[in-house]
Length: 451
View 1 (cartoon, rainbow, N blue to C red):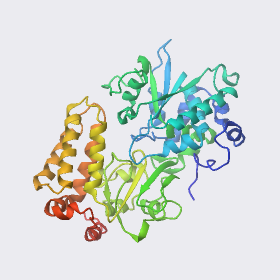
View 2 (view 1 turned 30 degrees about the horizontal axis):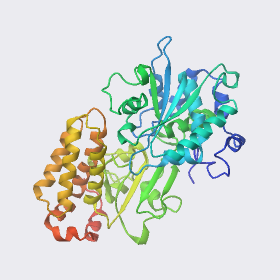
View 3 (view 1 turned 90 degrees about the vertical axis):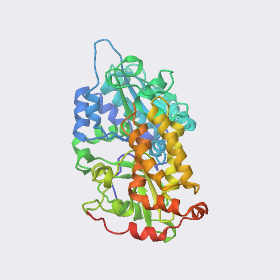
View 4 (view 1 turned 60 degrees about the vertical axis):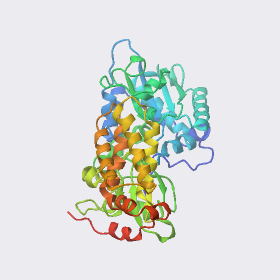
């Protein structure tokens, strides 16, 4: 069984409350951190190899070291809890069932970065979790872990929860900062980056919920010990939101040394696919990352076993690989229609585009229309090439990554499942029956990868 650093105490009765959390060793990292210099904590985080758990996977310690420290200017820490990626719900799980872990991580991170006022920007739909977090913050304050001169350290800190209004685009860090300032959530052109000019024009670090929570075991156990968990540059543990055609959907903590096959089929994790059906494909890192067919999901293009980590999932680039992303692991069995599912994603990204960039604003809508045409049995062969051309002209041509997030699923769907798109065009009546089956196609997907 994999070592658990974040979810090890989540099943303890009363762990949501301060008293039980403290009894179980909570807030020890705060006491330890206050005996260290901020620069030494940054070095521990660098040593740990922790990478951002929100999607990009950028080294956290390096990101912290970029924070500008001009004399007399306030610095801020902002926790990105705007978890809106379809298929991803691991941050919600942490905040709902062990909220003090996030608050503890926020205090340590705030001390390290010199942030006396820090924010948790939470997804608007998470209204009940807002109440849970605010209660945990108040408990921490009443017990001397927030406010003035925390634990006689000389450090002052307050944490505030700010609710978004339900816009996916505010998961992008600069749009989040705009929204936090009370403006419309539109991504900023970079540079300057938030580390230099963030919220209210001040140096700001934006980190994901899971990333900040991981600071607690790093300080408690040491960066070197943390780095020994996992493999290569995929150190520590990772939370995975597993859903789709699996027997045991839920949030799992893995150490990134296990294979994709083990994760899907072992009883410890997803428990296999219902009704004895075969694996057709998987979106391994949330809706914005490329879908992979079964043969590429279980093996890399080199014939190696695909592992549940950053490097292995990305092996082969977007031609034969994908991304760890936000850890939203969506499994599709042999009866699922890739065209229909990709239409759902195209509709989502069209709806959530902020409209600031014309390639994204116009392109996402165009893709949704073409997908709808194909799905409704009115498609032509040229529509498949048109989709490919549209996504290619969106990718890399927008201010923020939403354009890429909309383009990548379409590109991967056509690259790996073009036969299925052609089947829709050639069989319009069957297409409309909504019973795709495609068992014959599943046979092909299980075949070994050819160079």
